[in-house]
Amino acid sequence: MTHSDKGTAARFLALFATDVPLLDVRAPVEFSKGAFPTAQNIPLLDDTERHRVGIRYKDQGQDAAIALGHELVGGDVRAARTAAWIDWYRKNPEGHLYCFRGGLRSRTVQQWLREEGVDIPLVSGGYKAMRRFLLERFQQDINHSRLQLLSGRTGTGKTRVIEQLRQTLDLEGLAHHRGSSFGRRPGDQPAQIDFENALAIGLLRLRDAGDLPLVLEDEGRLIGRCALPLPLQAAMKSAPRIMIEEDLESRVQVTLEDYVLGPVAEYAAFYGAAQAEERLGSELLAGLDRIQRRLGGVRHATLRTALCTALAIQKESGQVEAHRDWIRVLLRDYYDPMYDYMLSKREGATLFSGTRQAVQAFLTAQENG
Image (cartoon, rainbow, N blue to C red; front, side):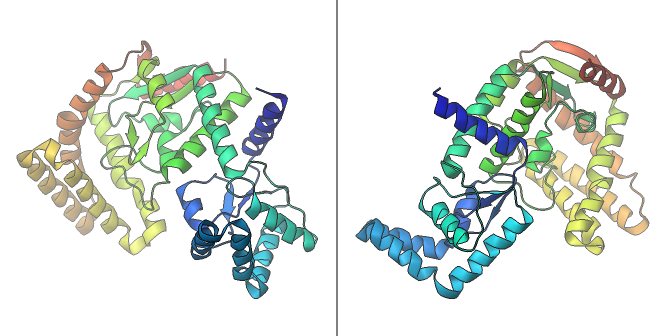
């Protein structure tokens, strides 16, 4: 790595490690395909304008494309967009500006703002260079991390333990998904690139802060539709494990809390209190239907009847005990065999096993040295 490359990497590290606000002036369609957690999109060209300029560039060359861009974004349009950029910078005076390659668009915005007395630093290389840095840095950080997997059957409360740790990344939180067929949450999941970017930034911060073991919840290849990056998948396959062991009834209780009771507040915030339980009930039924083929027709029908009965009782009286019946069968007959199979494919040794409380104490002591 040259001195220049090291300097660029250091600047990118500083941007991501300290949550510097970023002004992304790419078109919305570009932003939607991949961006950074602290970025806000206020484009120079909207999607239609970008498309027209691209056609002009292809047909007539760069000068003609630039001329069309100035024609499309002139007068009142330029004034309105400049005002929006200035307003953003006043709220984020430490912010930086970028486009796709740190080229014409970001330099144009920077120049227009300078004419208004505002000087926003430009990120050299733009989105493309920052994205490449994160991919390379993620590979390096994974290679140098002492990874440990927090394992346990469904309902052992792995996420609850993760939430109490410092040296960890909440993979399911970053993916906005609870990690099972019933794991969808209100609102959409992030784009794959957004998930990867957030994961890489989270990891570089942990690596920058110290060299403690990195504890991650044991996940499959996918969390909802977000795929774990290949370097992480490879590292997880052979990482040592910490095992949570809880009896079935304890796991039924945790699943009831995490999938039936707990999400109501999140659904209420998203859909309104009046619709929360009905929306959640519909999603539970949809989750069961998503695994119909793997359950088999008879077992799916039996579980669906039990779930519908539990939802009806809950709606009528507020009582949730009937949910235990379908949860218990689903854990014992579906998720437990699937977990056992997944565990058989792991190669790492078991460092510790015990109840959730014992595992929490073990990991907390490990963090505290």
